[in-house]
Image 1 (tube, rainbow, N blue to C red):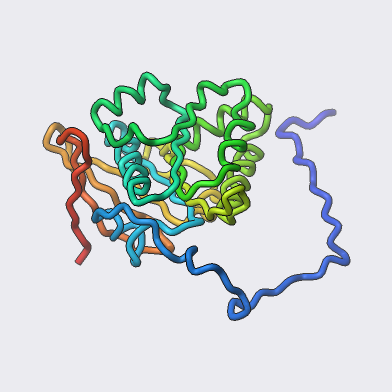
Image 2: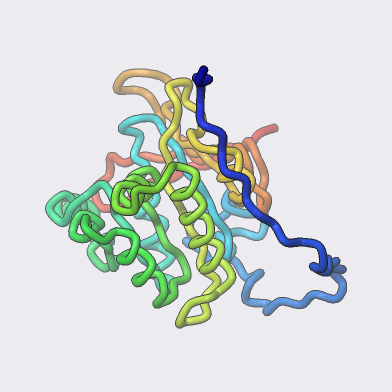
Length: 261
């Protein structure tokens, strides 16, 4: 009689008998100083990105947020400010097309200078498109969103969720370590989905390999609700500090700062 239930997972073969273990002493490790020079927006946002002020090269930041709170707008604002400071940036859009983005630029002209990869134009080969564009090398890459890009690659390749997740994480790590044509330690900012409870949606592996995690929230309800950003995890900065922001003034995001006592 056949047993019902989930099929057992195939075990991976590991030939480890004669593999030497490499132990690392950090006193013997050196990195270029540029890896520890933060990338700045020149706004008060820098103060919550890290204790040194700014986003560090080679790091990964995941952002979630309440519906309609302004995730894309705020993060495009950051990336535009990084670009204005002379950094090479890229926006990978899995959700907007060029018509949608044109409407954004009419309200926020500073976004008009950003180089953008519209994933909808590469629906038949999203994996190759992302890999090829990243190979050029960037200081900062914004991905909107993680879920949309990985879903497109999953459908193209016929992969399971774990495999496409591993592909994405490996890709980020490759460019974190400057394995690209420009030898840039790329910092990634990824918008991610959240659960109905308002928490980060994703596996523990994503959480563990992420340098920082933050949420954009509404403080209150209705037309008087304020909007704020708060980090729940940040290996380079503090937790609990809130940046309040407003999208009401045309052409810019206005910020104000509140710290935890």
